[in-house]
Amino acid sequence: MKFLHTADWQIGMKYSHTGEVGTRLREERINSLRVLVEIARAHEAEFMLVAGDMFEDNGVERVLVQKVADILATAGMPVFVIPGNHDPCVPGSVWEHPAWEEAGNVTVLLSECPVEIPGGLLYPCPIREKYSGMDPTTWIHNAPRNTGDIRIGIAHGTVEGVCQEVQEYPVSRNAAERAGLDYLALGHWHSLATYPGEDGAVRMAYSGTHEATKFGERDSGNILVVEIEGGGAAPVLTPIHTGELEWVVIEKELREERDIAELRAQIESVKTPGKALVDIRLAGLLTTAGQRELSRIREILESGRFLFGRIDAARLRPAPEDENWVAALPAGVIREAGSRLRELADPAFAGRRTDGASPEIAARALIELYAIVSEETR
Image (cartoon, rainbow, N blue to C red):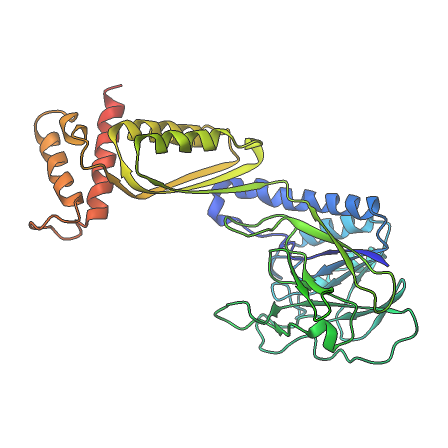
């Protein structure tokens, strides 16, 4: 048996944190589904499993449901789907759309009932509400099997041991072994993760989302091709990276003059800027020369070279040894204001502070004042 395991497509997600770029990102998620179909064909998969959260929620535009069904209809193989906690099976859900019946090769599994698949049985665990403290796999029993039959489970939930504030469909770490499954295809977490059993064989895994959804996701943008020789045999998992977008997070503390130049070199080294989203988070000490370089970095990020770019410089402080923060300002009230801000930016300053004049706010104000004056004198 050979099949493709994927999950958490989140079609229709807003990407509100990326502003106007969100429209492009939503289109990329739709287009990437065609890549999954091509991969399944190229690897001669017998079927595809989508382990929940195909859609961001049940309120997505219904034209998106039609688009997804149309793409899957071209797969040339069976596609089995379960609802996840983002798109649970509830009245008025996306699963009531007529497109699913028209796509004859797509089966939306809405009940806990074994389904025949090429070479064995599939045990679906559909989700019917957003949150639950129940393990969705508990209904699967370790029943005797016909010789050679392969037993596959498909579920959406959180493997025990994952730290979370709200319990979301807990799945036992030995769920596959307890239920007598040869493989349990999981969805819900966006990172690729595998769970070896006592014998070392991996019979339970998250494929993760096929295309990263935000900054900081670990090991996302993958699918799994799973091969199993027969009932009881150890599955062979082949991860395939499918993510086209690059979510680049750069966290840097500035200590020396060269640090800001290294930051720019790191940004310049991004191989496919047109498909890259860049999030820069800075802390530490900034010199006036570094401020000029920082302005250049902002210009690069805002030029359209990258798909998206932003800088968080709120934790930067003016380097106390750099006299130019004040000396380079025009004499008079502006320089006096700069001198006062420099005092307030020092956490050790023991003098009187006006309301709200924290060291962080004063530091940001001095840096912005210097930037404005520098821009005016260019």
